[in-house]
Image 1 (cartoon, helix red, strand yellow):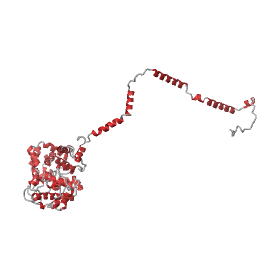
Image 2: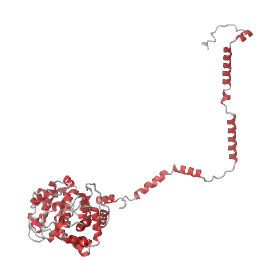
Image 3: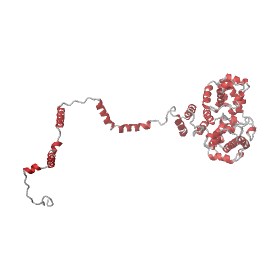
Image 4: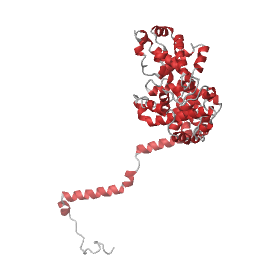
Length: 454
C-alpha cells in the first residue's frame, strides 16, 4: 500500500547487534518479547485448543459402538409398559378431542329441557303457566295442584309473585277480559251500592302496611263498584228486563255475561242493595266483600285481572257468601262446629261448655276466607291451597287454627278473650293439619262442605 508508513520510512542501515547490547537490554524489553511469543503460540494453537478433549472423544466413541451394536441386534417387539401406555394416550389426546366434542354436541339436543319436579319445581311451574298444557289438560291441572301443595308458589318476603294471579285464574277457570270491558263498567259511575262500598273501603286491612303501600282505596272502590254493576246487570237480565242493562256493558266479555251459576237459582223479589235481598236472592254488595276482594288486588298486576278473578270467585265458588242473608256463611259456621267435634272432640267439648260456638269467633274467618287474619303473605299462600283444592276447605283451615291454639285454649278459663282475634296466620302448618284432618271427615259431612257456599 502506498500510504503505508513502512514504505515511506527513511532508509537506514540495519543496526548491528553486539553482545554488549544484548546484555544491556532491560528486563522490561524481555517481558515484551515473552508477550509476543505467547500471543504467537495462542494464535497458532487456536484450532488445537478448540478441539474436543480426550474424555469427550472417548465418550463419542462409546456411543458409536453402542449404536452399531443396536443396529446389528434382532428386532424385538416392544413390551407394553406404563411409559408406552402414557405415550399412546398423549398421542390420542392430540387428535381425539374433536371427535369427542362432536359426539357431545350431537347428544345434547336429546337431553330433555324440562327438569324433574323434585329437582326444580319452580321452573316446572313457570313452564306450565307460561307454555300452557302440553298434553292432557286434566292431568296437567292435577300436576299443578300437586306442585302448589308440595312446593308452594315462589314469592318474596312481601308475598309478591309474578305467577300467582295467573295461577289463580287458571285454578278458578276465569275467562279472559279486555281492559275496555272493565273501563266500561267504571264509566257508568256510582252503582246502587256505592254508598255502602264507601263506608267499608277506608277500613279495609287498615293496619296492614303491605296492603296500604300497594293498593289504594280508589282502586278498591273502582273494583267493588264494577262488581256491583256486574251483579246488578246479571240480576236484571235474569228478571227478564234487559233494557235496563247499561248499553256500555253489552260489549263486555261474553263469558262474563253468563258466568254466574247462582243466577239460574235466584228467586224472590228484586232489590238494589245486597243487605236488603232475600235469603236466596243474589245481592250486589254485602259487608265483608271489601276484605274478600283485597288479596285479589294485592296479587294482581292490574285491576282488570283482579276484577275477572274476583267476579268468578264470588259467582261460581261462593255465591252464598254474597247473598243478602249470607246463608252460605251461616252454613259454614255450623260446619266449623261439626268438623271440630270430629277432628278434636276434647277441644270442641271444652268450647261448647264455655258456650263458644263458631258464630261468636269464626264469622269473619268464614266470610273472608281467613283474609282478615294477618300477615297478608301467609294469607296468599293459604289461598293458593284453597283455590287448588277448593275454597270449601277453608272450614277445615279454621279448625286447624283452633287446634294450633289447643293448649292455650284448654288452659284458659276464658277462651272468649283469646278467640276475639286469631293469632298470626301460619299457612304451612295450617295446610298440613287440614290435609291430615281431611281423612277423618265422613263422606256426608264432606258433601256438606263442598256445597255449603252455593
